[in-house]
Length: 445
Ligand code: 5AD
Ligand code: SF4
Image 1 (tube, rainbow, N blue to C red):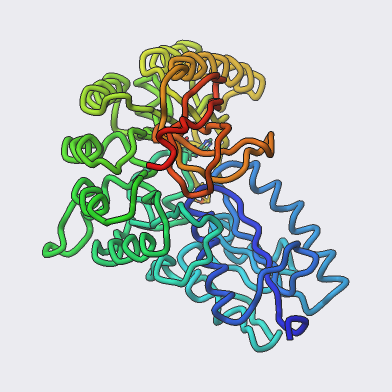
Image 2 (tube, protein in one colour; image 1 turned 180 degrees about the vertical axis):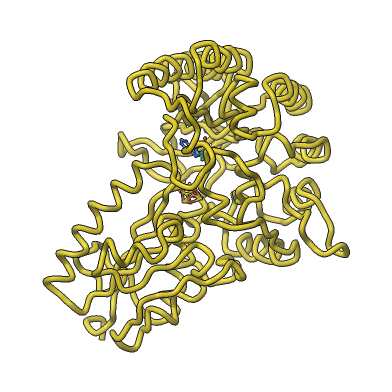
């Protein structure tokens, strides 16, 4: 009967939230009786879960949709569904621009996708956009990874960062109820998951919008997740520096399973630019928070996001960013060239920065970030780090690959299996990865 089974293929762009949404999309399609196709050209239903945070993913999507159009010309009964943030930002324009698209849906309407991609027939109506009333997290999932899982704690974002399209496409912040989150974490633990990553656009404002009887805050949620048996590691992303308060710092410091790793988006080190970005903190407050985190959490790994070339950014502003990077000594940083997004306040600001200047600043920033990350990683040499084994190394099939609690990738020799927690002696380091060997006496822990 397998030959009769309709098959789907999902292509995912963007952040971890989108990757997680794709697990829900897959889970839902499978609950409708569809099976996963190994490649898009073998699928009856092609789903694109899109991103629109910068211009690059938009351009990439256009190329993918070109292939989908070709597939549809060969097999007119193919269903093409475009979801996610780009779809939401473009809404009906999707159908004008790409007339072969059958269904378009925003991140808030994943639960309706099943109705729209009617598994029984091919008579698909052009999709509507639902509101943000449901958590995709309530749908069945189809996880790619056995021992690690994402857990959505909120959707949407109430911040008003002037460069960012996300609040427009993902709506107002809505927290998921703590009982539902903990039920999911407990189920995941029973299924053998050892590491969870709590996901939200601004995780540490979680809980503020819940009914007063449920009122709770993110630190308490971390503590409750920490108490779930079987979950050895807890991560969360992304917090906003403006909402990183003492109870959350204390929870990270005190909960054994919460990893010593905080991703804390800086965006800029210039007070003036941060103000124009509407981040509501300045460089001093950011650095004070870093100092508090480091004082409370020994051996903390700090990650960040930085944007260069925001409208009006001067050489002095950029130097201020480099100065904060030097002081905060990030272990990792995602660096972005500012990309104007239509409809955001920053896109309409005067003094957009020349592409050459943006590229030049980017190059300088990356050099500093890599030097500091390499120096930090070199300090790990000679230490034993606990590693969660993820699979074979991507570069050498004779080695294993895993991640330390500080979230650095390690390639190592040793006898183990995915999902094991092993102690690894670190022998070498680059700016992004470590190399080591499992310490035999401790492997059985
Ligand atoms: N241009 C460049 N980078 C952006 N980000 C968000 N919006 C933009 C934009 N318009 C970056 C921020 C954010 C990360 C997810 O993407 O650094 O933290
Ligand atoms: Fe994620 Fe933002 Fe891209 Fe949406 S636009 S997928 S929230 S990065």
